[in-house]
Image 1 (spheres, protein in one colour):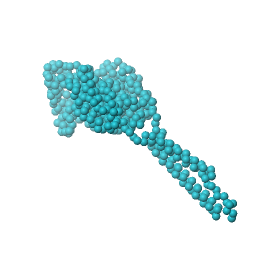
Image 2 (cartoon, helix red, strand yellow):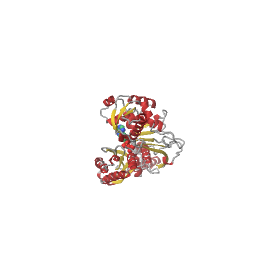
Image 3 (tube, helix red, strand yellow):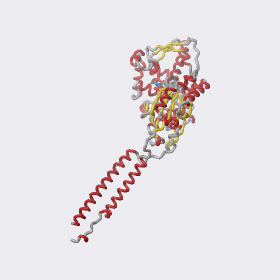
Image 4 (cartoon, protein in one colour):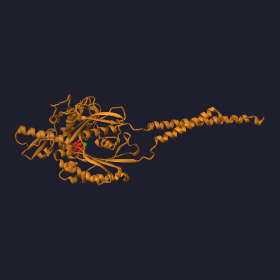
Length: 498
Ligand SMILES: O=c1[nH]cnc2c1ncn2[C@@H]1O[C@H](COP(=O)(O)OP(=O)(O)O)[C@@H](O)[C@H]1O
Ligand SMILES: [Ca+2]
């Protein structure tokens, strides 16, 4: 054979090989490009924010954290830590304003430990005061200013970025609670429905939801544009209708009616909302020391608060604190306040949760809830104390009243029925974070919820992983194909030579 006459075919010149090689190169380029876009922030750095919730009964400090590069993505902010300030709420320091600022020290020191030192100067700190301070401002504006100055002075002494201490309005409290629960439930960037928000505090209570009907009163309407969606919210805050003030309203009414019936000052207040066998000496000024009621002058300074443990009578007495006679709109909740029909699912948090959770009433229908509560209220006080030796007696004695108040507020006040009772979810947290107004307040003040939808990753993480896996597999198969094809061609060529 003439060796020179044999031409060894170069397999790389075949069109199919050229095509496969091109596919592999393009594939690698696409993979690298996607990796670069997807993993842009390679090192996760966290930022922090602090919000103090200065409630009527106590103050809590919330520390939030979020990945620095993803601050405009919904659901990225989470609660890192909370600290409960020792003692009562800041409004209780009206006679000693300095004490209000000093009370924050332990929790603020803790915040210094929890947040990395290099982040301190850029960490915003906000204090928002709610209904306790609204009441103090109505009673004595000078005292409320002094308390706010005192907490502001205290907060400025820490290495964080102080952003203000103020009394927030009832509308803000309702709206920011709604933003919090919907942000945490990741409802804000989806076309799905939103969650209404029900917040029960000590001195006020809020209801906020997206209604189906027209909002007839300007004061109850709030509009937001979040992540490119428009929201038209109904909100109302009832000052004096938190559970502690409602108890005072209800006891005040009972003292009044006992006085009318007897025409002598009551020495005993027989109360169906407290357990049988409960007997506690109270002072009259302690019931009337609130701008929520007209003061009643009684000659007796003290009276015996005696429990009867009768749920249905208790509900009758509580109904008297809701005025349902006058309504200048097409429909009202109570006290002449406009309210459209409740619509959709609701998250009920704060004292709504504490009370219903303690009594194991978070997942029953309305009829069962009432039956169980009736049995609880009629349980003798002695037995209640025996069964719960570690619970503060003040809380323990008031759960029957509070739960009855909650049912009455929701059913007679807001007009929930046995049909939509199941739409109320009693919640404390969503994920790691507490439901409440503080997170929404911070998201708003740091502009972390943009009006328009921000840019997103190229594809969701799950999709990205699947895509990379399948693409790698495809490239592997192509490589193998090339390899075998190349080997076969070389062998054929060698055979040809032989
Ligand atoms: O463990 C608990 N059991 C029952 N009630 C609680 C518990 N922890 C807090 N609370 C109540 O929750 C309410 C919180 O109200 P907050 O102090 O926020 O007032 P505000 O929102 O009206 O200003 C208070 O009535 C407080 O007594
Ligand atoms: Ca509160």
